[in-house]
Amino acid sequence: MDDDRDLLVWLDDDRHVRARVGGKGAGLGRLAAQGAPVPPAFCLTTDAYRAMASALGLPTTLRGVADAQLSAIQAEIERAPLTASVRAGLHDGFRSLVNSSPEATAAVRSSAPTEDGAAFSHAGQYDTVLGVRDPAALEAAIKRCWASLWTESAVAYRRRGSDGADDAAIAVVIQRLVPCDVSVVIFTADPVSGDGDRLVIDATWGLGEALVSSLVTPDRIAVDSFGRVAVYAVGTKETMVVPDPDGAGGTRRVPVPRRLRSARVLTDEQAAAIAAEARCLAGRLGHPVDLEGGLHEGTFFVFQARPITTAVALAAGPA
Image 1 (cartoon, rainbow, N blue to C red):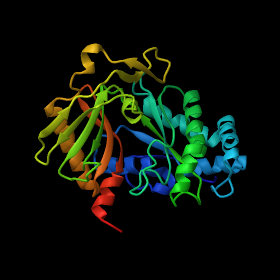
Image 2: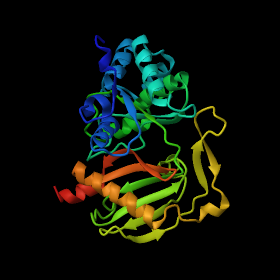
Image 3: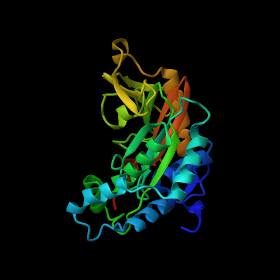
Image 4: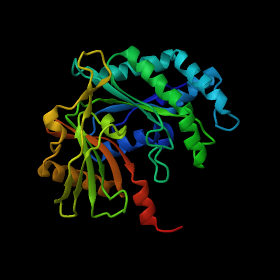
């Protein structure tokens, strides 16, 4: 690669295209450009993946790749060392990201070009590694995200959709991890009915992995078009995910304190404020969104955004 600037970019505006930074990366850039409360992040682009794949002689498309080959491709990616140019930029970016605090860690998230689109979300198909604390763990997390492009489930998902079959590449987003007290997933339109007047919030204690991995039955809150909490259903929250308390990096699943398991995660005022922020962002982006975010010491952060595929389809009407 002649220009190392092709390998790593900061996601502080919306100039980066999906083909280079993937769906998550492009979404974060758009959110940052809109002034959303997103933690700082940079992206190892698809150019970096392609350089690695070319050096290893890996397939560039799904065509002709048999399922029996997938585990060998993943193993080769995870075994190979990163190139000197990738390592240098990666380590510099990581130091800039976490040096503000000795306890700071990073979230390392796969970001495929076809991910978080209006037709296919690809949600949950590729790997995320939380609580990355040092450069060695960062390199391992990067390779794990690259390798997740070739899992059986991810390949099968891409083959079911028409997109992605002609190009096998993936970016990786490295974002400062916010040690959330509360995590939320917000749908600015009802994800079942598509009703744009009904915003839905799922909320639980700790980091968002408990929500996206369905480890808990979260609180579910419906907020009407006037910003009032119309429904608050308290969930069963017996497990929470927290940064590893031993300081070694990573995360740990721990029991939710008994007094909090059946307690409300959000006050009505917090739910209304989160709903107002989410609706404002959806208006700026021009479509209903599914946001992942959280609260840390009372401050709200947004970690990623994607179109609500069901709402988009309902709004479009029959084909």
